[in-house]
Length: 342
Image (cartoon, rainbow, N blue to C red; front, top):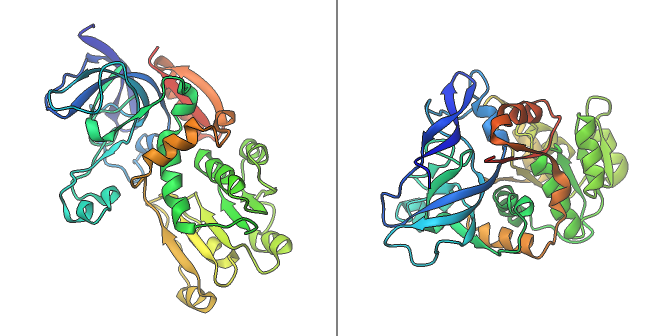
């Protein structure tokens, strides 16, 4: 194996440079060295490269990327559940397992969390180091282009468990990026009807229909409250804000006694919260943050082909074109954009 590899290195101030760096080496007993098959671009990567960055303080010199599919090529002396040749997907937010939050089962809120592509070198590279406990084994037969959805799907599953939808219930999804479209497919698989989607970008509206949305509209042209009410009468049972800035709209449109799930993360959003509406309508307002012990469930969904996520892939690009891919996602001209090392 070569001592050098190509990687996408964050240089600060919105600059990402593909350059030659040292191949990482195992230093701790619980680490594994992965040869990356693919790493897809996430909205987080887009936010890191905004000027100023939106909500993520990343030090220059860090390799970005966290939605990883890879093969194990070497293991630390203390690794017992994995071996070279195993294929894995990676839970990018490593946890200590001993802080108060971890002991409560809230590993996604670990006080000592280390996140790939944010404060530890990530997967936009030929090789990456992770710990054994966050590398989840997958079948050799699971295609890379499906396995790459494990991380976003695990995050969606965490939120989906909170809303606990039933067949025949109605849902309103605000935002039809990759996460919103995964929610649409999950809702469809659960028997939810109707599924209504709000999205200003035409490409994403078209994909929402392909993913099973029953009604799709442009919020710049139609009032969400009026449109949703015309379909559901009293309002949807569940509203999911994938954008990260639509809490007020979600509260306004959900039915009395309904649920609002806040998934999107936007530190710049400062919505006006009319508290009496929450009280008067008896709304359950739920927040969800990344994955929480949901990678096994996500892998099971992928391996059973329960969802048709591969249709969300709009681009597959080599690492040398990663800046182009990030720009496409930022402009809403791509959905799932997969980066391969070569």
